[in-house]
Image (cartoon, rainbow, N blue to C red; front, side, top):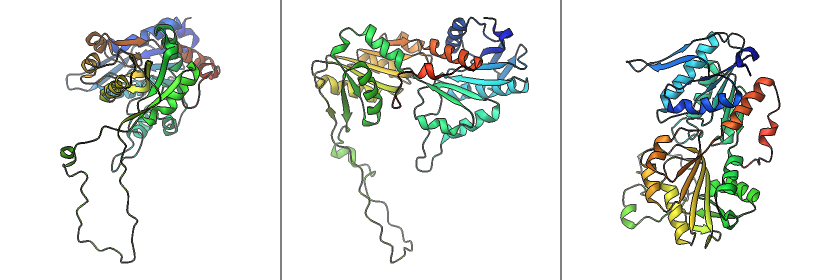
Length: 356
């Protein structure tokens, strides 16, 4: 397919070779060439983008994977989108497999909903559509003023379980917290496997509690309405950590959407080992694997961590051979083809549940 003649081009907004790997795989599947552009950082730290070919009247797809330097990647995407907008591109579609700041999608105390801010910035820069994968919260789609296609990686991870895990019929799907129970249930139902949920947290010692966090607030001399008596707020307290479900003599497969700081996964693996699981897998869509994650995984009871290539993690794989990668360029390239041709996206969501 000659992409230029058919009215669309695919660009990579990344300035590093590791991050352009996914873009190259997608264009190979489309039978297209990667658009000609230059993205680099000047000596003063500013990002500069130069488009090296005409994009007038075409559908432009910007593929942006998010490396460790998240803020630089965001600026690359914003500046490239604005450059394409001023170059008279007809539609500008962002292909952002892992959407950054997705964990900051709820108001917490005096914080801010940064994900909503980023959605507004992308719209202002000129994006007209976004293709992403496994948003941390599905409600994030409501932050945007343009269409969002939230694809799922579960078919690829389910295929990996069926083809690469021997005796997977003796496995149980595990949610490492009640928040992940719906996703785990979706996997368990499609694989016809059992379900287990890890609930609670490790109990603090008396010495750990003596840090002032649990003490009552200081009473200030403020005027309070004499008739106002608020009910006493009971503090939330989690029970000791327990496993709801039988994992004894079974393969435990922990599923989640993001694996970043791995301490909670390592702790879950230790609990599952204590309960009799003889092999432990961790499956996640986005393998961010920050800080000492590779070392902690290598030293842990986890036998294998399986993630997709939505986020570049080649360095982490060199540090930890337990990390395996599933390629999802197939579904991204098909989404690009269907959007450009005006075809339905329903085929890409077949057999996908709401909780997936």
